[in-house]
Picture (cartoon, rainbow, N blue to C red):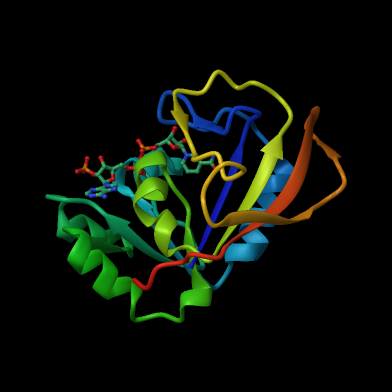
Length: 170
Ligand SMILES: NC(=O)c1ccc[n+]([C@@H]2O[C@H](COP(=O)([O-])OP(=O)(O)OC[C@H]3O[C@@H](n4cnc5c(N)ncnc54)[C@H](OP(=O)(O)O)[C@@H]3O)[C@@H](O)[C@H]2O)c1
């Protein structure tokens, strides 16, 4: 599986249970990369989506201990009550099709199982409250690709790909 996210200069990823930047080019990259695939998330990230609804044209799996399964059924997503159930749901799909889409707690939990991280770096300080792990310092992780800088809604961004040489089996 792969993590996908954008972060600021300090590896910050969010504030007030929301994103810090509006980035149309990054959003397009996210949409195209995850379309038709499986996205997995924590409950706060589902709540932060428009109308608290799962993402269209993707299989959505949400880790939500004590969540309301009738809501999941009505809204068309898969809800897992605990880590074991969550992992069992994820194992039903090819690992390459699974994307961890947040948030901070979910990234921390699933990072050891990620073979790659697709990170859009924003050259700004978004005043984040929650952070992703600094992969430049994380054991086993290395940067393998970095795009030229480009402008996205007034921000300078770069698309980066990190790989994990120490990926754990789910
Ligand atoms: N920059 C980006 O690309 C990006 C992407 C996504 C999200 N974000 C940001 O990230 C922030 C949200 O992060 P977050 O950490 O609050 O949210 P989160 O990871 O989406 O959700 C946390 C909740 O998910 C459940 N959960 C996650 N990991 C768990 C585990 N190991 N065991 C049991 N339950 C687990 C728990 O639910 P219960 O509380 O129900 O038990 C937990 O409180 C927001 O600001 C959002 O905008 C940024």
